[in-house]
Length: 283
Image (cartoon, rainbow, N blue to C red):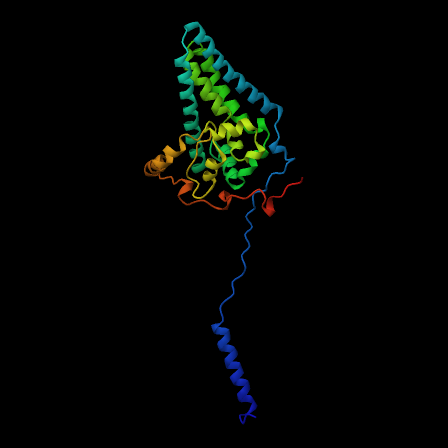
C-alpha cells in the first residue's frame, strides 16, 4: 500500500497524461481521392458500336484505296512495267509502319483533349493506355472511321491528279491501305492467338503484321517504345537508336515542352487488366 497521499497520485497521473498528449503522434485527417476513375465500357455501350456514318467513311476510304491500287495495276499493264510498281508498293508498306509510329509517338506524348484537331485522338489514346484491351471491344467501322475520313480527304485528290502514274499509285495505294487498317492491326495485336483468324496469326508470326508479343512492350512502363502498329518492322531500329528520345530532346530544347514519357505518367496511364474486379462485364 502506498504511503503517499491520494492527491499526489492524482497529480502524478495527470502529469503522465499531459506528457503522453504532447508526445503522441498527430493524426491527420484521412484524405479521400475524389478523382473519378475511367469507367470501363460495357459490351452494349453505344460508343463501341459502329454507326452508319462511320461505316460510310470506312467504305469511302476503302474505295479510295482501291482506286489507287487499280490505277497502279492498269497503268502497269499499259506501260508494261511490273517491278517498279511492286517495289513502290513495298516502300509504301514500310512507310505506313513508320508513319503510324511517328503519329502514335506524337499523340501519346504531347497535347491533351483540348488540342485543336488532334484532341479527341489524344484523349482516346490516353484512355487506351488505361484500358488497352478495350480496343478489341470496338466494332470494325467504329475503330477505323477516323482514318477512313483522313484517307478520303488526302488520297482521293491524289488519285484524281496523278492516276496515270502507276509507280506512284502503287506507293499511295499500299501506304494508304495500311494506314487505313492500322487500327485493326492494332486491335488484333491486343487479342490472343486463340481469338484471331488463322490467317491473321500466320501474318503476325511472319512479321507482316505487328504481333501481340511485340506490341505489349508498348504498354509497359515507361511507355516510350514500340510505337509502330502496322508491321512493327521499324520498332527495333527506332528504339535501339533512341530516335524518338532524340526528337523529344529537340522539342524540349526548342519549345520547352516535356513529353509524358519523361515521368508525367499517372494512374490514367496505368494498364488495367481486362479481368480486373473493376472491369467486369456481363456474359
